[in-house]
Amino acid sequence: MRNKLKAFALLAIGWIAFATVVPSGACLQVIKPVLLWRSKPFKGLGGFAGENIGVALAFSPDGQRLAVAKTNGVIFLRTHDGEEERSLWWQSAFGCVPSSIVFTRDGQYVLAGPAGDGSVKMWRVLDGALVKSLSGAGWLSALALHPDGKHLAAGRTGVTLFRLPEGERVAYWAVPQDASSFTSLVFSPDGRMLAAGTFYARAYLFSFPSGKLRATLEQPFPSASAVAFSPDGCWLVVGCARGTVTFWRLPDCQLARTLSTGREEIIEALAFSPNGRWLVIGGRELSICSMEEERLIGTMPEHEGLVRTLAFSPDGQLLAVATWGGVRVWRWQEER
Image (cartoon, rainbow, N blue to C red; front, side):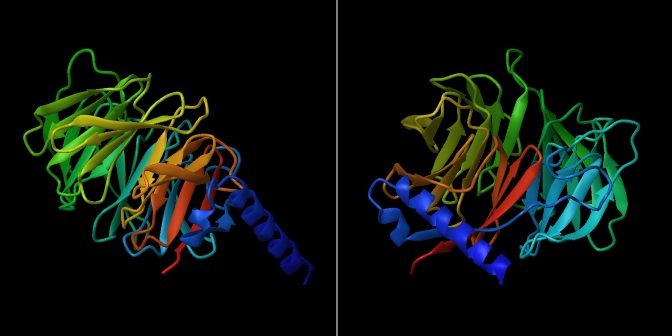
């Protein structure tokens, strides 16, 4: 009984904190983010929450499990309660936490990298067997799955394409010599473009499958760490330094507007809700942008730590947040 009263009190405090940062209160009429669970110390190999997990995560296609990066591998958590299902790992003489994770479209495999040797590891979800090691990508830092489910892009100072599930390397896209290392990769919803974010004030757009550089997007502030396409493919959003997010209209690649969180921070993670109504912006706080109103309408309560990865579940009902050392999952409820 005491635990139930404590949980109710924490939820009430979270609602009060959320209400105080919403300028008009209109947000509360349409959206109810409720903290579902946060990560606990892991039983699997590779350390404990608060030490060396988080950084990267991905929902399975059916939304029933969450793959989370840990030292030398990945751990599966049940999305409804955060309980550990299985630990996947590779053998290595030193610790390396994957910076990117993706599931194949059919949900049969999960891929993560970089491993200690710079490769991408591929596990079978059913039994956790390590089935392939995709090499030849150099020391990568970002992964992206093409909408066709048959191509994986891996990159850092160039983009390597692999064919799935065979893991065969099929192409390499070179980048301009003055390009900095890629921090994020994402395909457009129609699969015709690949966007790449970098540590410096440039993001890049490549055409698929040719690999031709389509546009270089110069940002008004340093860093272009995070990139995200809107679900309708009309916008590319870039997270910059100084708490700034830029909106680029497609297909003409024109800068349409700039949005500021009002905080001196680097935006390292972005996520659109599947219905395209909301953009969640991850810095040291979690900000919510209404795409219909084109403005920030609040920040998430009970959040702490610099956000490294954001992901909505396929049905849009859950939002997962990864920071260095921890994972939180929110129930994302909208009024009808």
